[in-house]
View 1 (cartoon, protein in one colour):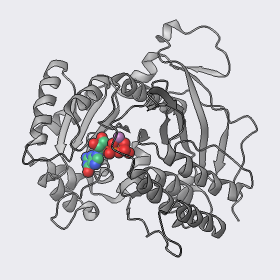
View 2 (cartoon, protein in one colour; view 1 turned 45 degrees about the vertical axis):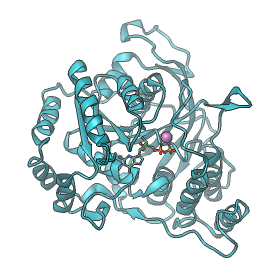
View 3 (cartoon, rainbow, N blue to C red; view 1 turned 90 degrees about the vertical axis):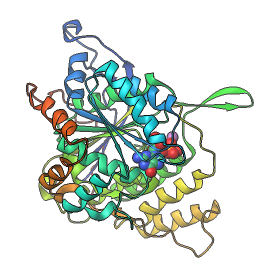
View 4 (cartoon, rainbow, N blue to C red; view 1 turned 135 degrees about the vertical axis):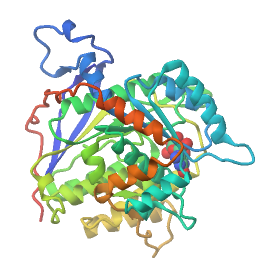
Length: 427
Ligand code: GDP
Ligand code: CO
């Protein structure tokens, strides 16, 4: 992949948030094809570099009652070297959609020899394993994992962790383009290849989202929710740095990936707030405004890369009504952040009143936050899962990795900005 080096970086304490990077070539060939000298603003990441990272990557596909054709398309797009974890919260009755997914996935993994795990969110073994491992927070009143994409993602993160994966990436199951899925995975790997920190996140900024407007295809660049979320996140940064910024373009990026080190450290918000809360959590914990619970991380950088995909992003259209919900969830976590200053709080309220999402005088409810996975007893979690019907499969997936040669971390490093970066000076 040939990718532009970040043009700007916003520093906020230990966080380095890099500006959106464009991709110039989806595939730049093998190492042996690399020219002796390269244009200095473009980074060449040979196929092997991405491949080596992808071998250590789990791709999590959350799914709830999506059409099988869409799920299949997504699976077809995931490179072979990744381990796939599908977390399904699909109906079991009257039609057993989960069974249908199982059948489709089983056939496909037989054809492809893919390393793959499909689990149901309501699997009682997982719920018990979570309880035994000291992480009952995502369980509901029936002692099963609660509904929600966020809850499924958290559960999958722990599965990837016990499989010994070093990177975890998320891709929604309702994507229409296998080519886009393929591209996202390589872009995740590209971000990790560019990073020199063990605490790294890569978020996809879509180049465009096709829509039909007056019977013409229109390629929208900005989502209606993300425009609002990004504006407030950028304001929050500007408030502390004293410099206006537009660095954040991926406040609501569902397509994102993390190093396992970072995935275990983050707290998670529920619902649509999970993605914007990544930023809030990082700014709170490693921004230097309030004391960090993990001073050792402050010694490193926390890197956030935002990579612009070339494929258009087209997913299942689920109606317009949830845009307001998404805006409310996103602004809720900003409003209730410990570092959100009064002027921004007032502006958040104005925005919510203006849109009629809240009535005058109302405040957004505090978000529900799940604690980091750091203190989960992984041994207990793993042991409990060994009793599950897929216990042996887990063992095999974990072992397959163990047999592999340990590869050194890639050493490509991004530049230290170009002078346009600002250093946060917390009040
Ligand atoms: P949007 O793309 O933000 O509008 O949200 P979607 O409704 O498309 O959801 C994103 C992804 O999460 C899709 O692949 C859904 O099938 C999946 N999903 C939604 N709810 C759940 C859930 O409760 N559990 C799991 N595991 N996946 C879910
Ligand atoms: Co969707």
